[in-house]
Length: 172
Image (cartoon, rainbow, N blue to C red; front, side, top):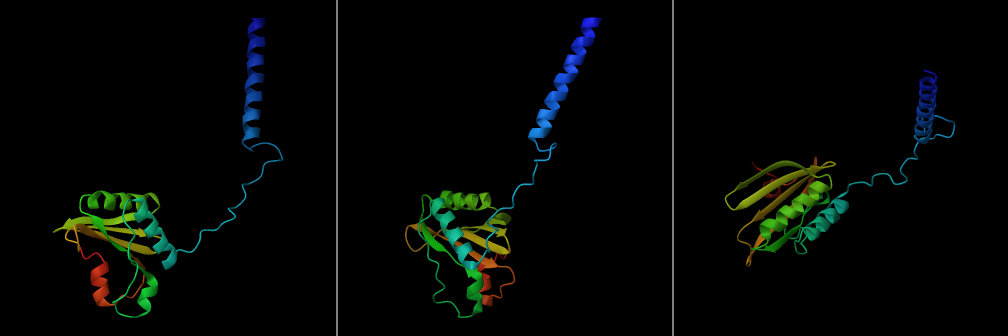
């Protein structure tokens, strides 16, 4: 019996030493534990410019060609400050794949799907992130042998002219 008590006592000491090592290493014991330092870089503002740059970057990474980000030919007004348009022609053979790859990249970077549907020859995806809605579309019958792809972000609360609102927002 004597050997059993010694073995039990040795096991208890080993467990206690292991516990102290683990808890000390985790900062649960001792006076040297400290809270992690706050991030030196706060989350940057999500402006029309940063949204436009993000959309263009993910579109390129998804395989889409460079897009047009202008609002030329559209009504003038303050609404242009809260909209980030992007449009391009994707080759017909790759249009579906690169559109979905772009949407996937957006989703991987915190854009959440709000709605998704297709009607006629148009695929619609609406995503949301940090006070913005992104209206993603691709349609057959572009100006060449491709499909028009548009990714237009509109800041929540933006007062769009009716004509523009019909073109950008999801009507389904």
